[in-house]
Image (cartoon, rainbow, N blue to C red; front, side, top):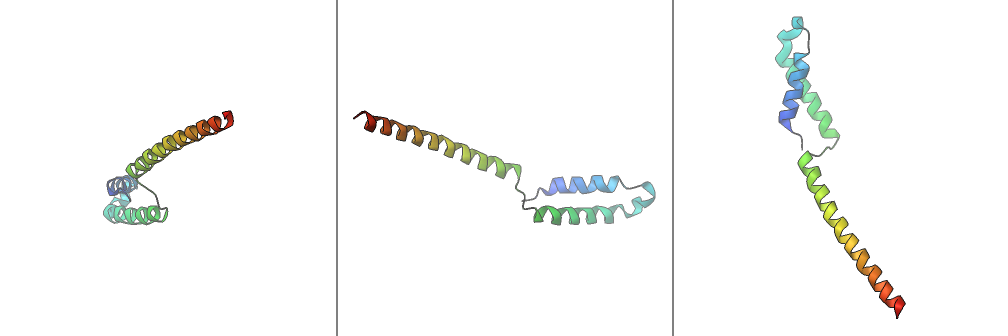
Length: 83
């Protein structure tokens, strides 16, 4: 999902960088920048920082569980080998 506040800020900064003699078109440029940036970012299929962090936490928990299972399996293998 796209953060539209950041998109608004970025399109405003782009419009502000336009030379003074073209500033009359500032609002049109800003809305056009926003539309182009928005459609480009949507095609990139990006995720928000919150979504990324949530997925990272899930993967960290899964890694912990996998490590615990591997340790248990190694213990079972050792006990079978000792018998």
